[in-house]
Image (cartoon, rainbow, N blue to C red; front, top):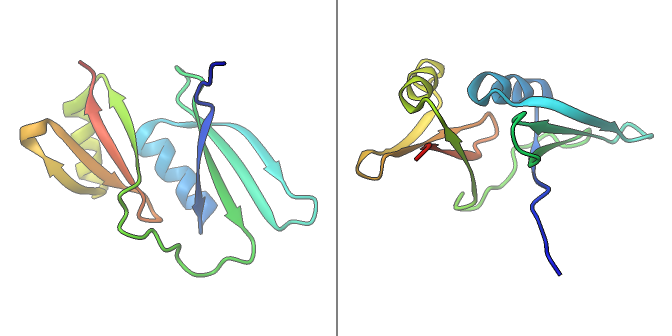
Amino acid sequence: MKFTFDHNNINVLDLEKSLDFYKKALGFVETRRKHASDGSFILVFLGDETTGHKLELTWLKDRTEAYDLGENEFHLAVVTDDYAGAHELHKEMDCICYENEPMGLYFIMDPDEYWIEILPRK
């Protein structure tokens, strides 16, 4: 028996703001969208146009308060082929929330305060 990754899910308060962030910050594009028949939720799947892995953004109609992310130890991680260019873009976007120069990585924060680790391609 073998398992492979398909997608990860995060819940978002402002779907359009999150879509804009992931497109600008990481170049992710929408690959699929599902609307609940009763309008209670929207699921949007984002892809990197390279791998098959997806990020599912879930928007819940009745949700009005920010999500409790606990100690925010859960995070996504992405690899870039232009680490310096990515760092400059994220600096301009003012979304860098933590840098670890000795380890050669940094984190950005999305509109819902989820952290995304940025790694250079090795």
